[in-house]
Amino acid sequence: MASKLSLNTSELFIFIFLAAALASAELSPTFYDNSCPSALRIIQSTVRAAISKERRMGASLLRLHFHDCFVNGCDGSILLDDTPSFTGEKTAGPNNNSLRGFDVVDSIKSNVEASCPQVVSCADILAVAARDSVVALGGPSWTVLLGRRDATTASFSQANTDIPAPTLDLSALISAFSKKGLSTKDMISLAGAHTIGQARCTTFRSRIYNESNINTSFSSFQQNKCPLSNGDDNLSPLDEISPNYFDNFYYKNLLNKRGLLHSDQQLYSGGSTDSQVLSYAYNLSKFLSDFSVAIVNMGNISPLTGTDGEIRINCRRTN
Ligand code: HEM
Ligand SMILES: *[C@@H]1O[C@H](CO)[C@@H](O)[C@H](O)[C@H]1NC(C)=O
Ligand SMILES: *[C@@H]1O[C@H](CO)[C@@H](O)[C@H](O)[C@H]1NC(C)=O
Ligand SMILES: *[C@@H]1O[C@H](CO)[C@@H](O)[C@H](O)[C@H]1NC(C)=O
Ligand SMILES: *[C@@H]1O[C@H](CO)[C@@H](O)[C@H](O)[C@H]1NC(C)=O
Image (cartoon, rainbow, N blue to C red; front, side, top):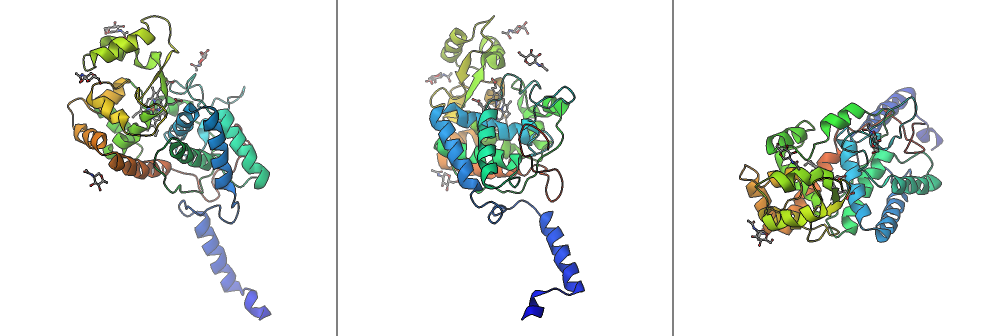
């Protein structure tokens, strides 16, 4: 019996080969089942506690995963703080004075580290926290693929070029997602994330004062909250009907020309994507199931796996 348990040389090579292949394999839903079986439960309970304190936090956490994935892939790069010798992504145009939830990610990370030191990546924490946030706000659930590792670098310039701006027209939105390997269909369903959360006046001022493809009662109402000068940081909900519920009112609003951002209304402005917006406005379950597929696709953008990158101890800095 004892000889059965030890490996001869060629068995050892096969073992090493298989272990190496597994280590560089694709993401997997069971990645932490043995190394940190409590990881998912800890992340979920920390996310739920944060959202029960402030519903908007669910939106902020979901957005962090998006902004992470669109810059060098889903590698936790968004979480790195600037230092005197390092400029991360946090002050890039789309992120500066805009992203929130870093403190919640810190508490998730320290809770997970307490159970399983240096096992669970910050990039995976963002992917799981995004799912748990959507579920907590009444949206769909999906199986999160795991095994991403954390970058030791970030890209301020790519954060400026690759995260789509709210001023983009439909064709540029399609290109921005296509550049990340995501289809137009995925783009339309992912944009439905704007069924939750808030935007600052500065991101939609030109739409509410200068555009014609907008509901006039909606633009007057928004102009009261977002003056021509001053009030850059005044907030309006991206979905005025139910900003804390993950439903399909985002698309219903677009049918009434009540999209808040220029980019939102572009999805329903007489172009090729109108039909998909209509189908989501009329069929909630279709939106929820397409969103679940699209966000898994987004979570697969260029992850670091195997021995690439590292598992950060503190999400704000490299080890
Ligand atoms: C289609 C292209 C997109 C554009 C142009 C865009 C743009 C924006 C802008 C300008 C804001 C407001 C930021 C601020 O005022 O500080 C915002 C908020 C938000 N975005 Fe997007 N976004 C897009 C796609 C997405 C995607 C794919 C997701 C997630 C899957 C997402 C999730 C969110 C959420 C949840 C908020 C609210 C965050 C909060 O309340 O803290 N967005 N987005
Ligand atoms: C980020 O915002 C701060 C505060 O508004 C501002 O002082 C700083 O210049 C901005 N950073 C960049 C890189 O634009
Ligand atoms: C509206 O458009 C005009 C002309 O392009 C521009 O000068 C003005 O700044 C815009 N107003 C807002 C609020 O964006
Ligand atoms: C403007 O919004 C109202 C309320 O949602 C809606 O009844 C009306 O049809 C909208 N008008 C247009 C032109 O979409
Ligand atoms: C709504 O979408 C679901 C899922 O795609 C589909 O099975 C169902 O038939 C659709 N319902 C209607 C009323 O079209």
